[in-house]
Image 1 (cartoon, helix red, strand yellow):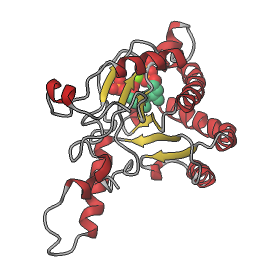
Image 2 (tube, rainbow, N blue to C red; image 1 turned 180 degrees about the vertical axis):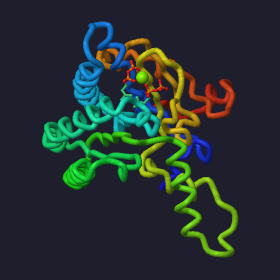
Image 3 (cartoon, rainbow, N blue to C red; image 1 turned 30 degrees about the vertical axis):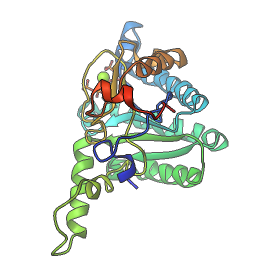
Length: 255
Ligand code: IPE
Ligand code: IPE
Ligand code: MG
């Protein structure tokens, strides 16, 4: 399963449209501040951007969209902001899940949900169950997610399952236990809001992902901004360790 999509085990197929886009949706607070509004107004507008980008990705044939909504470090924010973000998450899910389902979107959540309220856990469970068999875009929301947490939970599962004589751990043993193991690794990573860092997002999976940073604040990110990111992606030469000459000689055309 993961062997086929591991960029370090086999060279993945590269298409015109990224199969998997992962986004750090950053800049909500600054968007609000620029308008003399409370930070939560930025988060609210951010939900609108999510709606637009989900739709645009589905229309463009992107198969996986993974959105960083709340990091394991975002608990460090003022309590009030954290609870407003949770409220917003609940409301957005309640309002949108039927529409996601109608559009054949498969909804998933990654992250340590144990620290979320029972209400949220239930709502997430119901939404995931409802959309499980959908064959359209897979929308994954990373909530209380951290790349290090993900690697550690995979290591701990691996340790628990190992028996004496299992031999050395192979890449696919670990990759297969990460939260995103069913998805191909992201082709394109987008971070809005001007910062150029990973902030503990998908550390393992981003090994060969093309990185795209834009100053556009998340609430302003729309279909046109997505197209600019995809256009940049198309101009990249994805070598996966090889030389440009090798790529030129390759008989396999881009899909
Ligand atoms: C991203 O926007 C949303 C979350 C991290 C939940 P921010 O809230 O980080 O916005 P800025 O970076 O302060 O502008
Ligand atoms: C990253 O944004 C996390 C999410 C977008 C959910 P932050 O705003 O928390 O990142 P830092 O703190 O600037 O690195
Ligand atoms: Mg931020």
